[in-house]
Length: 170
Image (cartoon, rainbow, N blue to C red; front, side, top):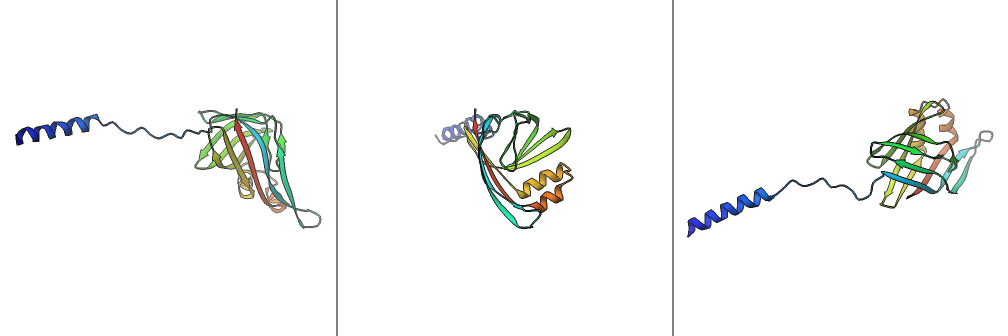
């Protein structure tokens, strides 16, 4: 009887081990891939007045219409325009590549024949909406990589930037 019990345990163990399969990698339900419409932007920018040298806060609140981004699985994107650092719309269509590293979004594209880079922080990503933010450090990072000739002036005149952009999936 003991032999049968041991044989049964051995066979059961073999069946149990062989029936296990490798775990599938977990993929999040939400993805940046798809078509997104920028719905609104809000925040604050502090600009130093060039003549007086005094900082001036400007609250930024903008309803956005007509700005869509389409992110593809091959890491390319197209957009009908762009939301600028002062929450206005640049209606010039752009296309390029994007990188999503952790929560950092990097957009790379040509603007007026020149390499342009923009950085954002991905704050929320759900199946139907996402939120990006940017700040002075990310603005300067993009301008530096873009080799913007007026970066020193921008760094002096923009003393603070905090901008949030909301998107809905369409």
